[in-house]
Amino acid sequence: MMKHVKKLLALSLSAALAAGMAVTVWAEEYTEVTMQLSHHNAADQPIHIALEKWANMVNEKTGGAVTIDLYPAASLYNSGDAQDAVIMGTLDMCLGDTSLLSADQPEYALLSLPFLIESYEAADAIVNGEVGAAIDQKLEADNGVVALGWTWNGFRNICSTKPISSVADCKGLKLRSPGADIYLDTFNTLGMSPNVISWSEAYTAMQSGIVEGVESGLEAFYTQGFYTLGENICLSRHMLSIIGPVINADKWNSLNEATQQVMKESWAECAAELNQKVIDSEDGYRQKLEEEGCNITEFENRQEIVDLFTEYWMKSAEGMGAGELLDQIFEIVNE
Image 1: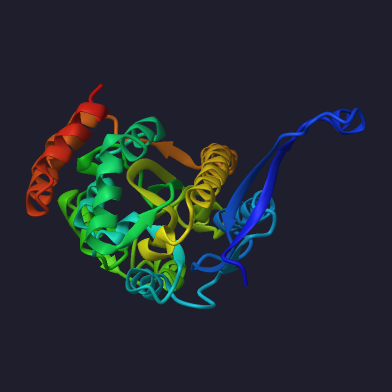
Image 2: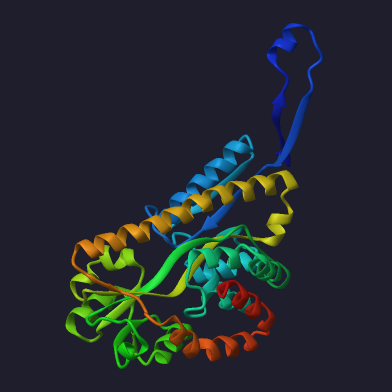
């Protein structure tokens, strides 16, 4: 099989042919390749739909030279194993998650520090600016993985049986929590009583009173009925989930520049569209929850949260040798 396939990008007008005029042809070569991308999201979720659109765009723009085969719903690897496989080079691509990648590239944990990033505008300036670029470069240098562009998977909030608008309101609240240290640290710092329970058991745990609240995205609160158990929704935005396709660096470097450009530009288009859908979806589910009579609150004193978590942010950054990056983030969020 030929390593490259030629793609005609432009031709002079057909009238020139009829007139016998010389015709200039610009030809572009794309690497002929089939790649596998594994992720754990269901096929009907927005991120898979965006990845599917991206794969189709790349295939079309390269004249069929590049094929990206998608394996959703952990049909090939679960999320952790997929990440390991991309690092080792036994898998071409996976859906990267900055919180998971922080296990191999600690600086990504900066993007998941609780309450540090409180808006999509700040997230865009950080993740798609100098800070994100610096971490992405380290990912390639240290782990042999190239990030192709990040997108939002939504802010995490709190649904509970009592209203929350201050740190004092959090005292002793029994909250279902994932088992990762950063979640436990977050809720313990707030004075809550986090209880590690699998998500599949979260609803029954709240229904039976084992916990008084859960934390997740607004969509989950609405579609999975948690708001019927606790009508209080705190828009805490305590953590932003950031995801995007990543590729093994050796595989990436085997692609020529034209192929790389098409893949990155096409994903940038799909990611921008997906980001807007995520933002619109959050607004939509907030409205739905309000229509169901939910009590929507926020932490009224942002400075109280900053004072509470600053030491945690700084210790976390120092532990990964990323104090300068944290300073850059501070400059952005305090603008």
